[in-house]
Length: 257
Image (cartoon, rainbow, N blue to C red; front, top):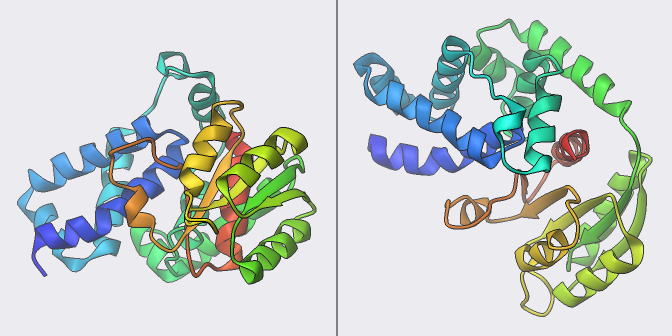
């Protein structure tokens, strides 16, 4: 595989990771651009990218650590993204890095340790601390937009295991909007392909036109949503999913919500 092909395959997922770290599509994409600019301008770094996805994330963190990127919340348009960045700066970055790498990005603790240049035991401890902090966050009401009955049931059980309330479910765009208006959830879990051929992305845009509720997308085709052609989801889980991945995404979404 050529370097361009390797990057085309890996970049959508690095953009997802950077966006989840920053709580902002604009900031996340700026972090990824800075990584590519430095890597492609350094022959050794450029050569390392041929090693695959792990090497790309390691380079991302090397650039992030070197540049010490900080964002002034007052410079960000929109209260939601500004609030997200303000919250990000108030917690330990290393815990978020370890948690997201081993859950949302599905690296093993050993791989995450290589990316972060830590010991595996350190990564495992950071993840445990992050989970403990997140579990203390306020519980909420959840709307699930999903047309597959078995996955719907799995998500309902997962949400209740976190002591949140499932306040409504929907299998189509119109059902989703009606459920949102009637139930006023504090979080939405949304599939992309819905029962009648409508789009969960359109359903969520309807909802976000009425409220800035946090949303976690769950889809079998994440690369279709990470094109840069339209507003992209900050929290994106790939099917088939691990329950721990969904739990981490829910926690992140509520933390920044």
